Image (cartoon, helix red, strand yellow):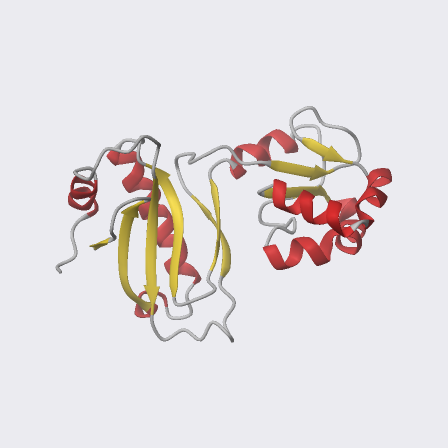
Length: 206
């Protein structure tokens, strides 16, 4: 089937059966010529419009009213693997004060690392807490973590209740971010599709 423009694809997707919940809009990028056993594609994509509320936890030097905070004296509570797994499962993003990162790596690294939730310089390690926590929370609200585990990458980029213009802007920004992360850029893209939670994918050209 011929690939559609994003506007036309969204028009088609909205013709589907009315659902009682707010569907996510998924972007699917099928890759070619990339050996994911040798090439690690794990990035944070920034989109213009917030998709959903993110659950954020901070490893900070003092308690912060904006987020769940774990201070250094409380690190010892998470030596129990069950508590540690529960913490990692309950939060989408983790941020940390730079001075605590060695202790964070020691205590939480084995659980956060494999899930891609370790605080990073790109989005999550801060050098001061007064204003930086709010700033990083604003950035996280429009961030998408993308990790390619197979040659077909699929992740949520928007919600069906957003305007077509907002959806298109998010898809375009996310797609550019994916392409930029690939070894040979557009040459590694086999095709691109979009779908709602309960619809079949539609091929698009971006």
